Image 1 (spheres, rainbow, N blue to C red):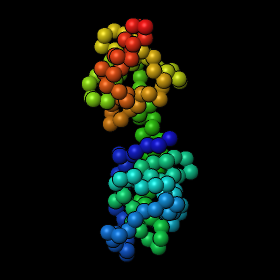
Image 2 (tube, helix red, strand yellow; image 1 turned 30 degrees about the vertical axis):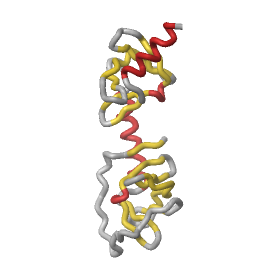
Image 3 (cartoon, one colour; image 1 turned 180 degrees about the vertical axis):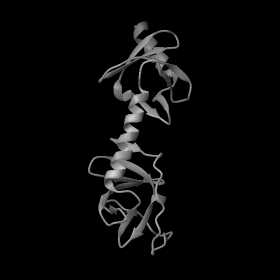
Image 4 (tube, one colour; image 1 turned 90 degrees about the vertical axis):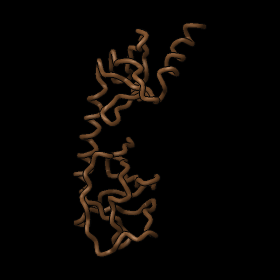
Length: 165
């Protein structure tokens, strides 16, 4: 599962090699901790983030979290610490997706509340009172909020369309 992990407090690293403007993280580059143990491998660079694949997770970390060292990237956490932080964040996000939680659309407006959750579906009770059943992966937790990938208007239009047919 891909996750942009913004809540990690990354340790500052002091290195003999300064971060030069020409330095670039590249796919396949090894990421190691300060003891030299493997943390993961760079999958790609996406804007200001480096996507790193550990043995368990693929996670986006700020470019500034790394220090180049002998062709590898130093990172201030061990693989176990990074995996534990990702898992802690995933659990916290999953806990937000629960009955009675407000759900916001992509424009930031509340579309409704969660009525029920199971392993496959989330049922939303819209502001209009209508119940909508969405695939579980259509709902996500981000920054302490539960969101869907469409606006309230778009969701309401989809609910109204089958009723009109």
